[in-house]
Amino acid sequence: MGEKPLKILACGDVEGSINAVFNRVRTIQKKSGQFDLLLCVGNFFGSSPGAQAEWQEYKSGAKKAPIHTYILGAASQETLRFFPSADGCELADNITYLGRRGVFTGASGLQIAYVSGREGQQDPTPAHCFSPKDLTQLVEPLISNNQFRGVDILLTSQWPRGVWQYANSPEVNTKFCGTTSISHLAYKLKPRYHFAAVEGVHYERLPYRNHVVLQENTQHVSRFIALATVNNPEKRKYLYAFNIIPMKSMEASELVKQPQDVTESPYTIFRSLQRCSIGVLKCFVYCVYLSQEPASQFFFDLGKKQRGGGRGQGGRDRPKQPRRPPQPSGPCWFCLASPQVEKHLVISIGTHCYLALAKGSLTPQHVLVLPIGHYQSVVELSSEVVKELDRYKMAVRTFYKSKGQRCVLFERNYHSQHLQIQVVPVPEDKCTTEDIKEAFMLQAQEQNMELMEIPQHTDLKQIAPPGTPYFYVELDSGEKLFYRIQKNFPLQFGREVLASEALLNIPERADWRECKQTPEEEEGLSKQLRNDFQPYDFALED
Image (cartoon, rainbow, N blue to C red):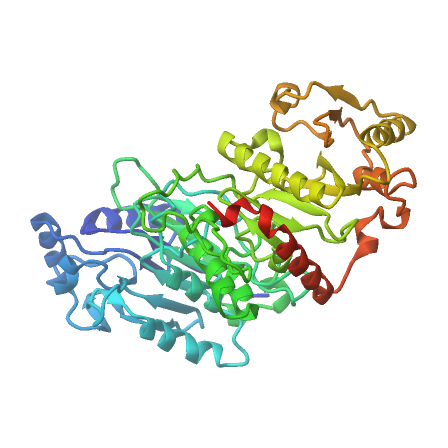
């Protein structure tokens, strides 16, 4: 292509250790040649007498920065005095304050968007904070251009909240880290590189996509890098070196190349919110994402009063919150807080689990019991989640019994990402429990599988440690059948048995993909089932 890459250094909180960072830059340049820019995020200045004395040497001209240095504004009240105005200006030779917010475009065409300070929590916004208006005035002129594809670099002091979704976890308390306004800013501006600081740690997230695969044209990936404080005692990384060719100078085919470790965007929630109808459902999805709390703390509008963790909102009788479950590495269709969940199928929401109409259901009352958090199988669940899972199983059994139906539950921990307990009703007048058991045993034998009967009070963890692939059936009598999967297990086995002539006699519905319905039809079935199940829904009573 011929375009020479720019060599850039990014730095975390300097906090007045100006000599230290510039000495480090000199060492790097001695080994690797001259860099074009140094970009500093977080707090550049320190409030100690020593830090002020260091700065005075540069301000007076006694010392000079060895590289063109661009810094963000104050991220604390104490350092405001170092910035003569909210507008960008040169503070010393080779040291430039970018300003409160804006876009800096270099002679090469490199485009750097920036926002100084922290998110303001009061009105009027303090001078070391940014307001929603600041972000709007930064974003709108950029995205209103039809040719806008994104910015090369985004500089913020605070982290974007939820950036760790679908990726490696940072060494910070994610419950209190970052702000959603920065997440939305990153979603809108699609930076190729996004740098932040103020948390005191180094975190380099896996690159993420800015498009939906198979639904949108391929776009460039984004990389988020948080940098530690200069001279931190833990020796965490505070300087990051990289080469970049400005977006405007790149061929589209080169720009959109996808690395092997690319993940989904952590900000897909904002795309979902654009499509989501306003009201409580939108608030639920949004709040779960923002808080990173267990999903049980938020209300979900199912047309009826639904607990969804509403109990104890005042703080007196709220149950102890569970440890946050593992996060999926990509989109999950069953994590309740995920934008991929088809929420019109949801029937009931508890504290740790929820009930949903099965997509492509065998019968109109075929449901799934699922954990709200991301767990792959029953054997990975904590005791409190198992306890509520059992409550849902009992509630559905009682519901089916009132309809003259037997209850069959099965789980397939094989080629599945998120635990799904399939719960299927079988009319009592069609067959006995023994008939159901025999049908499973016979079909297993025909496929050379040894389906074992296990004692009713056996804990699955005793025979299937986490990571073990298995198929499990539970009958209304309490009898349990278990098969440890070796290989080539038929994915529709449970449905095939129940749909067979010996039981439900609907063999054409054995594959859920052949039973798809329109969203309107699914909505109608869900609404009916929600109303019918209401007398048995303990989540409404707790």
